[in-house]
Image 1 (tube, helix red, strand yellow):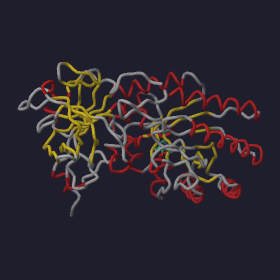
Image 2 (tube, rainbow, N blue to C red):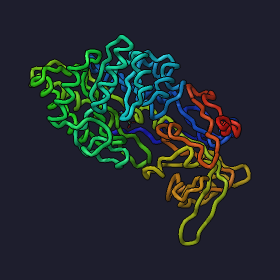
Image 3 (cartoon, rainbow, N blue to C red):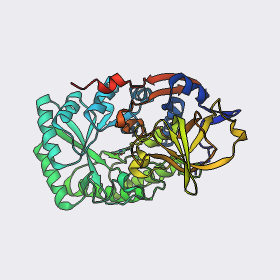
Length: 439
Ligand SMILES: Cc1ncc(COP(=O)(O)O)c(C=O)c1O
């Protein structure tokens, strides 16, 4: 179990909160709020951990960063510098990855409903892998690859039929899932026939991803066992060697101080032991192994700064603390009841210092016109007041990436921190930006 302090990289100098060596109140003043703050230092530290625990420890391995978690040009460039591959799920993510200089060979393209245009772009760019999600896709890729005069490497994304212990909206491995190919024999034979009929596609191996924010390794191991059995059948019955095995992402992170999560090795070591044992038992070559973490790399590296706008005490019920952001910059609580930890990182100059305030249990409410727009429920804070700057922690993954302009609120700016300095990575949207596509 991980023992590090939470939030990692956060500390106080006097009453003021610092993250990665940078004064958060000063950031709020300079760039305004709400403000996404992402520590590149932390991202790179996670990459270094993955190198130690996976890439250097086991040969023929690869990490693809699941860029849907947080995709910006800056982030992609950092990952390129770390020599990680990139997982993309749309033409837009592919476009950005290529623009950031990611080598196409290091890109894996996913999606359960890839359009013709997206498949064409992926094949023409010569992406390293396309993960197949349905039968027709094989024929559609065959068509694009034959036009492009290339041979496209494929993985089959399979559904191992394992229920992962996470919110049902981020569980993907059970049989009734919109993602992946079910492992029924009749289905398998149709896919194998398709491969035989398509000379411009090349089967490389299997992929599974069973869900996100998993806090124990049991679902991964149960899925892996099923997928390895399937790999054995493919090889022995159909002569189809699984040269590559991509075990997806889903490794959980800490959102609350009380959360304890397995270390990345607690996931990786037993999985790799399974594959090694399978390979020697079945007398089949050891496949190249890959993982695809998103949240684990960037989730705890991010926080969001908000300004408190108003407070409202409903006697005997609860006290709402309304801030200047919410569902538009972080839809996770409304979407799947995600929980967050928050702290006041700078007291309003017009209010008493934090040390003079009483601890209160409050609920942080967003500014959007939805009752479900609650960022953190029932958390203890030194009685918040208007003008305080509040940090919501572990917002690095699936917040900026899922942001919207609901209520015509411009998206926040984003700063990246590295070695105790901040740089503006994405400017704040303007009202003109909001109207820029309207005819
Ligand atoms: C195919 C695939 N790989 C990897 C991921 C990354 O998951 P996580 O961010 O939980 O690691 C996802 C997330 O939805 C996914 O669908």
